[in-house]
Length: 228
Length: 301
Image 1 (tube, rainbow over the protein chains, first blue to last red):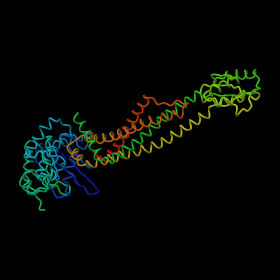
Image 2 (image 1 turned 30 degrees about the horizontal axis):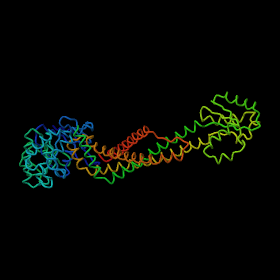
Image 3 (image 1 turned 60 degrees about the vertical axis):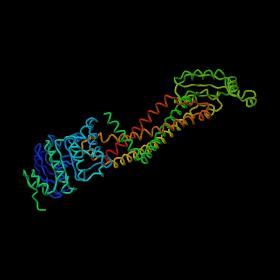
Image 4 (image 1 turned 135 degrees about the vertical axis):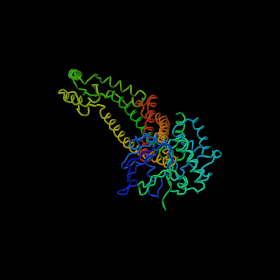
């Protein structure tokens, strides 16, 4: 699903954000990407979305050569990647239903598809009774569920989450993680960048650890492993 | 696709309403530019009509001395008609000249009473193929050896409409140049203003744009509402300009006709329709260009 070979990204001179990263993630995996701030987690995710191009190396996502993708094809790549962020990125003037529907509208899905898929995915994330609530009427955890619904409504094969629980309390975080886990069990590959130690330790999933732009550890059923 | 068209239009109109001050500035600048373009087009057409009418009337008059021997006049007449530039030559006798004057003054009996005897000279009227040949023909006539015995004064007594024509050409040139300069400046101002409104619109919707990119909306899907907004501004400007022109035309033309009774002044319905289409196209063009500039600079997709 994701294959990075010898990927190096340099923003400023002599200070690489990623150094010779080699990572392969198979279809259906659940992977934690951990590391302290500035270790390159966000760069990693932005490279997969082709918001950035690497300085060196090759990247394949869902069978597509991301680096040599023509720019007009980038939107199609992004339709195959669901995305969840720490700050939710919801539109404040739209209800949760409209926020999710928006993602389908702008890629040209028919009204029929929208009317069947949006309620379904909102129920899946546990917001069956909050269709008409605006983001400021929802708790942080509920807002993140809306954003996960939006990321997942198009059934992408890959779901990226950048610090999805960064703004949430531990109890709510647990709920979000189990939701991501459930999405993973439908066959979707899930990659979660986080520094939520307890979460990583309790889930016992594959852990890729970055430090100063290098992969320092990659283990199945791993733990967070830093003493920070 | 039908949903998309609705979506684009709704977005464009929404944004137009939200930034109406900037939109108004852009729209009125376009309206003024297009109005001037229209005025200059109509003006040029009217001046052209006038010129064609004057051109067809351009002839050379050679006024003859009363003492000119008829045989020599006949020789000159035969010589001139043989030149390739000359299409027609007509001898106007003193009597014919007087008859014409009486005809011209028939509405003005007071003036007619002043005319006693026949003070008018006989003359030769010469028509040429092309008004631009007038000067050359006049020069050639002056070089005729017999001329001194036929004409009192070779500079005063050989007359042509050339001067009027040259004046009209000069007027047209000055008008065209000054309007072209003004149009370039105003066109540039319209572009900048449109680009600026679109920039504001992009800024106001940056969150939505970010999400659209994230979920994989195609580049053109993101661009279209802004392009439409630019086009809309161009079209509204064009509509305003056309309204102004139509009103102006119906007010000014009758008065102009009153003043310049002897010249044909007309701007046909068909020409006006063509002008409307040109202005609309120009409006769309300016709108499209302005929003493209803004999109290229401020909307990275």
